Image 1 (cartoon, rainbow over the protein chains, first blue to last red):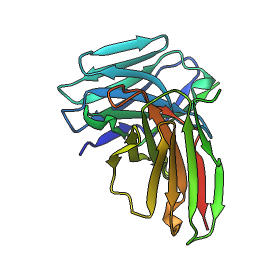
Image 2 (image 1 turned 30 degrees about the vertical axis):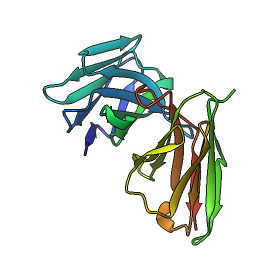
Image 3 (image 1 turned 30 degrees about the horizontal axis):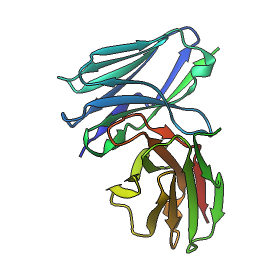
Length: 112
Length: 113
């Protein structure tokens, strides 16, 4: 089955700096890669996603890149703000059944 | 106007008891899921249902039995609770099996003593 590795497990950045989280996946059949943000005491919330036919996608301060050949994808947050502090999860999905396999999560702390 | 709701939010119970967690979505989605998040925050799918039909069953002990009375509801019943069942359980839904985005509920923190 699919295996998703996520690094780093914790990330501390100064407000205004950029944060980068990297994930690798094992199954070349995976074709959809979402990123979720989980705030304390809440459920994960989708913040951005990318499909396998696209190499990069941007939404304001958030961008995701995908390298299908190397089977890795990354989340970039620019101009970080304290409210970006949360746990971020990457995931990968194959077409059948809409089953998401999640990475282990990255706890991001943005220091004011 | 909550999209995916779960009850209860917290559940504390003794080993060996039977308990249920309820989930409802008002998004008109066809597909619903249960995930387990352990103490290290690792999220793993347990079940998915599409139009009340079981699609995914991820080697979950048969003490766990999901039930979908209709498309908008997916409940999780757990028999003979064990210490290792302590976790946060999340319900989620998506428009259908082809539409990727999954919307998560707020979670139910289950503590087994």
